[in-house]
Amino acid sequence: MERTAAVTDGRDERFLVTGALGCIGAWTVRNLAAEGAHVVTFDQATDPRRVRQISTDEEFGRIVFESGDITELSSVERALDEHGITNIIHLAALQVPFCRADPSLGARVNVVGTVNIFEAARRRPEQVGKVVYTGSVGMFDAADADPGTNRLENDATAHPGNHYGVYKQANEGTARVYWAENGVSSIGLRPMTVYGPGRDQGLTSSPTKAIVAAVLGRTATIGFSRRTLFQYADDVARTLVLASRSELRGAHQFNLGGNLVDLRDFVAAIDARIPGAAELITVEGVPLPFPEEIAADALAAIGTVPVTPIEVGIGRTIDLFTRLRDEGRLVPEQQGLTA
Image 1 (cartoon, helix red, strand yellow):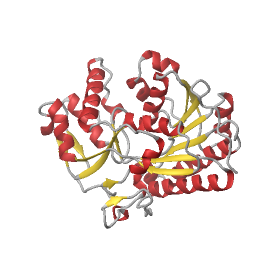
Image 2 (cartoon, rainbow, N blue to C red):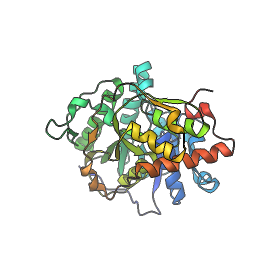
Image 3 (tube, rainbow, N blue to C red):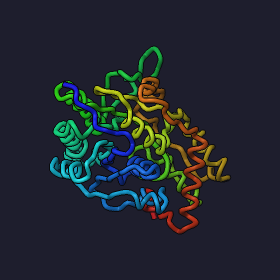
Image 4 (cartoon, rainbow, N blue to C red):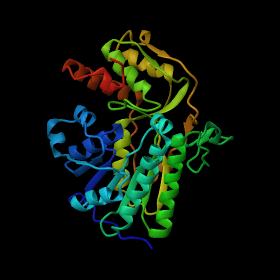
């Protein structure tokens, strides 16, 4: 049975962002705070440095920080009830290296945590309108691209090559079942290579680390080669909010668009802003084991999605890191670099 959507006319929206202290989460809560929306974080971590580095004091002051464990349903429900949450943006997850190191923990956070979000929403049909969550192109193998177009189509069958991909595929199944059996609407977005301030962890974080290194005048290595689809973190966050406010009903999953860029051109764009950076940055390693070309036209169903040109996104990232450096706040270890 289809549920009644919660009231979300701007004044009555109350957002809960799980995994809010990570990269995409930080940009999501910052953007909501910037527009004056009521936004609550939900994260087991306690260091809001990623949110702080991209926010003004006024924006940061509007954010309500809530500590919680996504693997505990009661913790999720308490946050929803205490803050009267109407919109859930679910980003809490362990990334590829952490899932590989501890698959059991990865499954608890990535799979059980997602089930808890959907179950909590199911129990509040008059309160929560829909669940928006991040899937990942990482659940696909390069061979999953259409043999005719060489693109990963939105409805491609996934063959995950690691634990993280298996967990992301399971979450899309969870979303479909909660719609079919309980009428819980959801939208899952599948990013690929996210870059920008705050992107200091994960399999594809080395391009952003290279920008940090260039700003600091240090050497860096991007650990994979050839082309990948880049998405500016701010764009991903804005798309998540757009999805949360859409009128779509049902269980939907969408590939996320962006800029298909060769890593050599990525480095050249850094060098254009920081002359000499190309001599500091090495690109090496095999290509990522995922499709390069990704069909994202279906995403138009939620509205006009922002896609920042790669040169602009890199420039904004350099500007922010340069300001942090000049203020003495660009700490290498916090940006995923060694001391």
